[in-house]
Image (cartoon, rainbow, N blue to C red; front, top):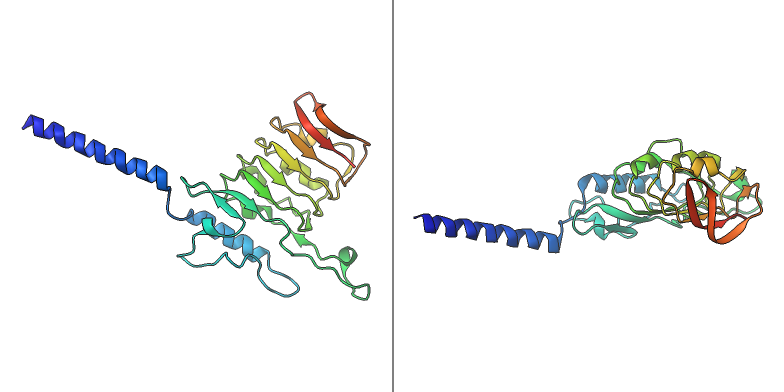
Length: 231
């Protein structure tokens, strides 16, 4: 009887190991529900103010629609969490003729609600470039992205108010804030907490420095970066 029990326990252990390996190989089915809802809220915030069309047509509010298969989204195959969002150049801006009365120098500009990124705590790479987002970064949200390593905010309308929230992204290795509306001295104090930063692009702003350095460059005592671009 004891020998049969031992064999049964070994069999159950073997079945458990097989199921565990299969789960690791195939990963989870579908994305995390909280993040699926978060992506749909992001999509709703990107409504085209001119034509009233929604961008990101593959992002469907349907239960059978797996958000890990949506365009511009990449997930961790094991956890189902979103790790990459490439939301660059969504076509949210429009140029107008000189006869049209429009603020922002004939260019429509969208406000970015940073709080919409709260659900994506496993995010590693976020690209929001070329959307002409404005400086609505006072909303909480960036500080939740504790694992973010790459952030691209180039070609938007952010001013210096973006710098303080960026200082909370202590896992950043690459930061691109080129071609925005930053001005004044080099933001050493605001970025001093980014100890893992390796690449920084501040070109195309109105910063008070004539500096274009490639190679190792120590921006302050707390960290050294491989590239600094200031135009």
